[in-house]
Each structure stands twice: as structure tokens, then as C-alpha cells.
Amino acid sequence: MARKRKIITLILTLITIVLFIITMSPFFIVIINSAKASLEIITNPISMPDHWGQLVENIKTIWSKPTIRYSSSVFSSVIITLFSLTTITLFSAMAAWVLVRTKSKISTIIFLLFLSGLIIPFQVVMFPLVALFRIIKETTGVSMLRTYHGMIMAYIGFGAPLAVFMFHGFIKSIPKELEEAATIDGCSKPQIFFKIIMPILKPIVVTIIILNGIWIWNDFLLPSLVLGVGQDIQTIPLAIRNFAGSFVKKWDLIMTAVLMAAAPVIVGFLFAQKHIIKGMVSGSIK
Image (cartoon, rainbow, N blue to C red; front, side):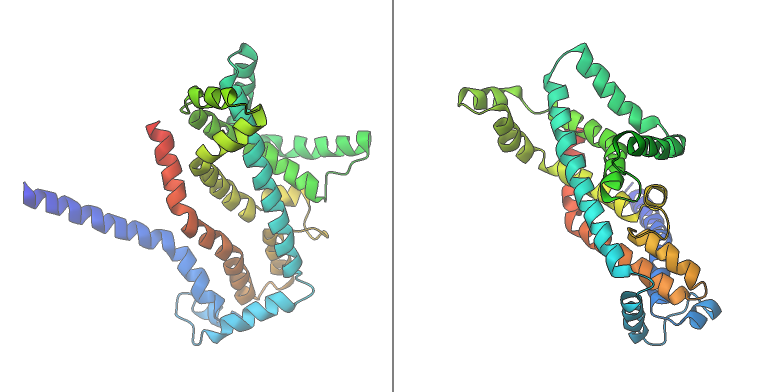
């Protein structure tokens, strides 16, 4: 019996190692090719670089080229990601709290409308979204396309359904007696939410921030529709797309730009992964 268990453990370990190699191989290829010249990548893309100093040279080239506008793209990505995550997290938590504590048919219908956003494919709403933004411009004069607020509003619309769903499930497990005790102590509704509910929601907040942050930071299709390619405001994926067209043979710069774009997300994920696991486990148990 013990021998059989060891064999099963060995097989599972080997499968885990193989899956790890398959998963990490694209990232490994990006790293080694970021430290090569373009000709070296084309001739032997899977070999180790001759000298890693080429990586620093590639970073300097990308950062200093005015035609690439990589620094302004980083600024735009940071602004869009931060404001999108803040609004998605805060307003979704508030909406979920009200929906959970309000027992009525209207609250149930509103919650189901949020859930419907999870099952509608993005391809179905991409062109109606652009048409809606144009109608808003014509009727109110407020431009939504090629703007930061238009991009952020689009991300709120696509990110809120999942956030409301996760908050809704978590808040149902919070005893209502906590809020009743706070009310007896004289707390108002906003004080109950920000002083009682939000601290309890910390694990699920971190989970939502990471899940939406990775998606928003790396997204290409939605910014290409709302911001457009080659416009004044562009995110990092759009910037990589631009100079990939201008320097079609400069694969060294493309690989380095991809590595620079992925690095902040990877670092953030490594620091917050224990909170993600804690949030998911807490939600599943409760």
C-alpha cells in the first residue's frame, strides 16, 4: 500500500513538473530573447544570450525613442488601471452590500442583471459599445472615445458583473448582527459600510483587484476600440503594437517591451498571491 502511494506521488510530481515547464516556457523564451540582438533571435530563438548587457541596451532604446512613446504609454496604463480598479472595487462592493441586505424582487432582478453581464460574450457588445459612445457624444457633447474617462467607464461596465457576483457571495456570510450592533452604537449607513464591512472584505477585495488588474493591464482589444491605435492616448499593449509595425524586424525590442509590460503584474501577483488564495478559500468555505 505504501509502495503504491509512493508511485502515485511520483507520477503526480512528474506531471506537475511537466506542466510547470510548459507553463513557464513562453515566459522563459521572452526573457532570453529580450537580451539578444534581432539577428540572434531569428537564427536561434531558444539559445541563451551571449551577454545579458544587451537587455539594458534594449530597455534604454525603448525608453528613449520618442516615436515609441513608451513612457507616456506606461503613464496612461497606470491611470486607466488605477481608476478602473478603484471604481470597480468600491462601487461593486457597495452595490453587492445593498443587494444582499435588501430583500425584495427588485434587488433580485438587479442582481440577475449583473449576472447577465457574465454570460454575454465581448464580441457581441463591442460594436454596440462604440455606437453608444458616439450617441453620447452627439446627444451630450461629452466625448467618450479617445479619452481616459471613456476607457475607464468601459472597464467598469465589463468588470462590475464579476466583482458584484463575488462580493454578493461573500457578504451573505457576514452576520447581520454586526451591522445591527453598529447601528445601536450610533453608526450611520456609510460608517457601517466603511468601518465594518470593508475591513471584512479585504481578502475578496485583493482577489478582485488582482484578477481585474491583470486583465486591464494586458488588455489590447478594448483599448484598440475605445482609444484607437496610434492616437495620443495609448496603453502599453497599444504601444507595443505600434512599434512592432514600425520596426517589424526589431524582435529584440518587441520582446523587451513585452517583458517590461509583464514585470509589474508579475511582481504584484507574487506579493498578493497569499491574499488571493485566502480570499478564494474563505469564499468557498463560507
